[in-house]
Length: 241
Image (cartoon, rainbow, N blue to C red; front, side):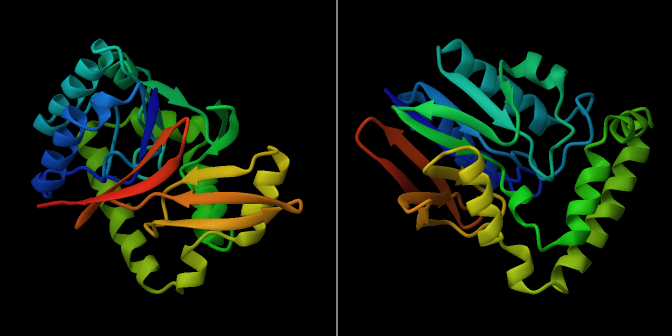
């Protein structure tokens, strides 16, 4: 028995090599696991479940194929694809998880997150996150024609890139205080997340006890995943052609 974790693939038509790497990963590594956890930002952008594209069709088919192969697939919203909804889950067989999500995995209490909630020093982003996750905001956005949603999203992405380029690295990373607070609140010694694009295994002390924070990397020049079984929990990497 084994579980696999990935995040921050940012799938998009402009990066076909990343899509190919993901499809290959599903056909090989993921098929050897009993569960696949996608911890946010599977897509670079998702403007609603009514989005129709060759990429979305292909990914939906592959995820459903995985589900039909008796592999459970779970997903969590990221900051890019938080509009993934019930229809997407129906089309893929994916189970949507809350963020954060506490699970017992191989006898160890584990907290899964996308990771953006931990970046508490980025006040402007946290304000936008609170606004955009509001059900009323989401309803009003999804009620707009899909072409208008696309234009709004492009404008938001442009502003986000400009703002990000002006922020210090410390602001873009997680806050150690936020990490300690949430791990203490959920009483866990293992936290797995993505979002920051800074893959690493961090050794921590939480309430005078050894703990770990494992950060998944984004799929860019390399693909990152965590392989967990009853013996170990390893952060792994393979090159993207």
